Image 1: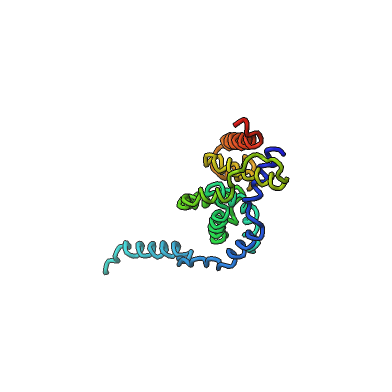
Image 2: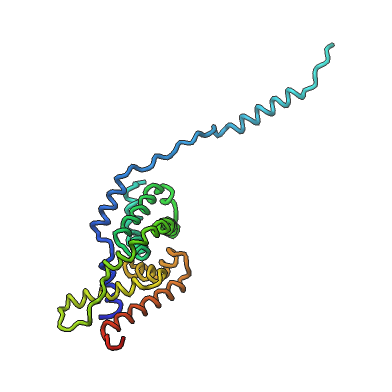
Length: 69
Length: 174
């Protein structure tokens, strides 16, 4: 008997039996899958709206006051 | 994505190696099974992320979790010696007229006892190679050490086991 055979014979005694592996698999897949957390998100167009609004306010607030006739 | 099918693929690909890893660390196949279950429960919980990861990355992720869990597993060290002894009882004297089955069982016990006495890095490497069926390259990736280091550990471990078997075969040379 070679050294590899002896080590393989020992390995067979500590290896997880297929039946036990299958039972563990079933226990795990029986647990509910995690529900992905819903993260509140901004509307993707928020920046465009924000800058457009900001620009409009800047333009209107810095416009020279029309002199009264 | 079929979660269960994807999980089954990962489970079948890595369960043997993960169980062997924990067996090498704890010396107890039953504790190793419990720890393996903890690892794959995390795989199941993070499957969505893992499914998009390349295969090497999946293995690395699995063994990172395993290594982290094995730190906790050291709490079981008090039971380690007993567990290994249960697995690998001391061999009796050399076979005289024993049956082939008894001799085979005794040789398994000699091998187990020799492995139990190995330094942990050698024991883990040999257990993963023998029981987990992993190559040196796979072991290196899983353990995060160079392949040359793995081969050296395996060589030392095999030599120690061979010497133990030589002593068993020829007790007069002890």
